[in-house]
Length: 219
Image 1 (cartoon, rainbow, N blue to C red):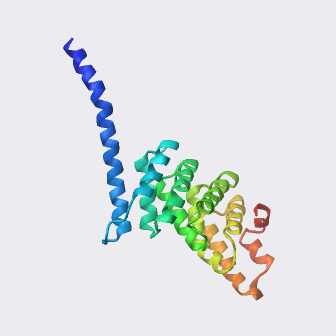
Image 2 (image 1 turned 90 degrees about the vertical axis):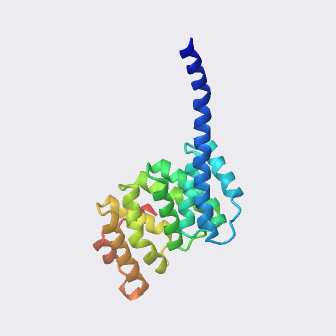
């Protein structure tokens, strides 16, 4: 009988302890984001980011504290509240779709959207960029980490040459399907992009030499 009582008490307190632990994790994650966004000054209001985290925690496979983790990685990239709110849902979607960490997903979103000079305050715009990531990893012979590596080497040069994110993704996909992936693809695209800045050097031969001749097929 005593064991039944203990068991009953345990069944009451286990979920309670779990709830307390979840709340503590969320509070800890929120404090980290607040500290970064406040930059040592007056503490910023976290109510909107907290609300977004709880919403995502209720509507996705991620917990609210994990959604707040997405905000953390955007905050350390220097993004403001509007940018963070715009990026949080997309970071979780990209992480889930590609089976990668939230940190990896947010790093690519923040770094590469900035490199391409894209509007990072509009949630639909950020979502569209996330969709490009997931589309490419499911329609070309490359995975998320290889794509991230290719973008790291090519995005800034492509933007400088007036080449859009969509065109760059298409080139990465075409080169991946030709067996050129990751940093090799990024370096090849970077070289081609820099060549296009001087129109006298542009030629189909350059594309062919770098394995990018089929890029237009994916655009």
